[in-house]
Length: 247
Ligand SMILES: [Zn+2]
Image (cartoon, rainbow, N blue to C red; front, side, top):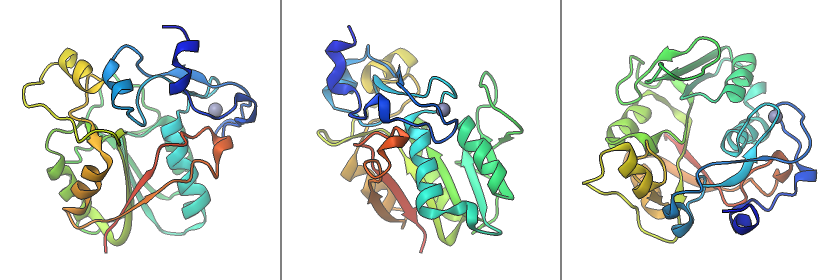
């Protein structure tokens, strides 16, 4: 498949107006993502699949830049004192920035082997953590819940350790043209690649199903799109933020 034939799946951002908010690179974005699994195109999965999205200088991705842009430009968490942030499966550039502006910042992952992390990472299984009730002002799970089979267990744990008034940013790949895709008989990496377009995913969420899932654990869900407002940051115009408040 040539690049010309997948133009419909590329972002509308023009490379000449992309300026990486992390490293300042200006120019074209690299292609990334899978283009060999038809399910991603067939269900028009937002936040997955082949697209021009990776900064060639610092390797930041569209998904990483979206959360960064929201936290910096909208929440302005860099200006807030004494807040606590938990970041599961941390992306390198976002981790570096959060570590530099947040005193109480904890990056962690349940899979520490065979991954390239920077700095110190704690072992954290988001389904069962050591943290107290109401501990964090922010919890970031950026394309993490899509990998978890018992997603309800993880959501209850996120809700438990989030402060009242705190915010969880819970991004996953989304289809808006199909109901949620999840099969009981899909087990291997190869089967997941064919079914969900990625070897570690457990499902593809429909947007309404996903909001209902988040709301089922009492989150107040605000779906928001800031991508066009900050298009120079190389964001996917179609990717909404799923902002989950504990009230
Ligand atoms: Zn960059």
